[in-house]
View 1 (cartoon, rainbow, N blue to C red):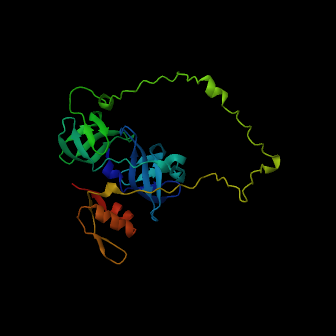
View 2 (tube, rainbow, N blue to C red):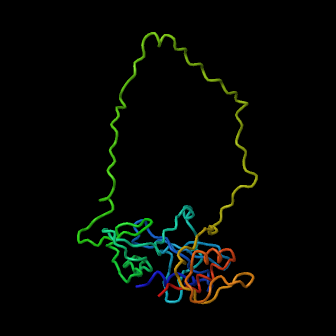
View 3 (cartoon, one colour):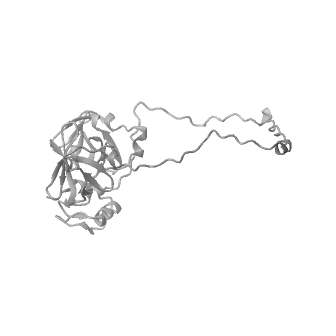
Length: 266
């Protein structure tokens, strides 16, 4: 078993090159939140990439291991993914009882979610998860429910699409025939020009850059004092990262350092 907080900030080790490709920054969950599908990584230049979990060779104690840089190749639609990490969201039961914030997630070796851990020390098996929106809803009742049980019932207006409107004879006699559309001369049709520089196809596509907001860092504890470009303090050691600290780290290009030198609050 692994904790999500232990995966965040781990380096990515490339076995073929023997190189550290970057640092794990965040994750993408499946739509039902039962499994992690993709890890988000950024390198030393703070360029962001994703790694699908089926491309991971080993999740080690000290690093996430990949065979080679082919694991960093992104799908075309990967850029359109929406960040859906639920860490720091409020947890409520069906009865409206507040159970604290989600502070960590327990995963098995296949990156499948096993347990949700809250700030009030209440732990919930993934089978109890009912819904994840702006808040997390947990089913603490003994009977099984799905989110479809709470779907609104929308009444559809009955319309008859088979009605035919018959115009009076006087109106039909006054209708002018439709003019033929103007003919297009052959000379007016221009052939599409070929691009001056045709596209090149590479065997290994360049990984596409992603943009993330780093919201998963909020609530974590800084392990050292982080300084800005002009030695101004972004956050002091042992302080809890706030939204203000996060924005300051982004402005000073210290997001990597803030991620590596932070951990989930005990």
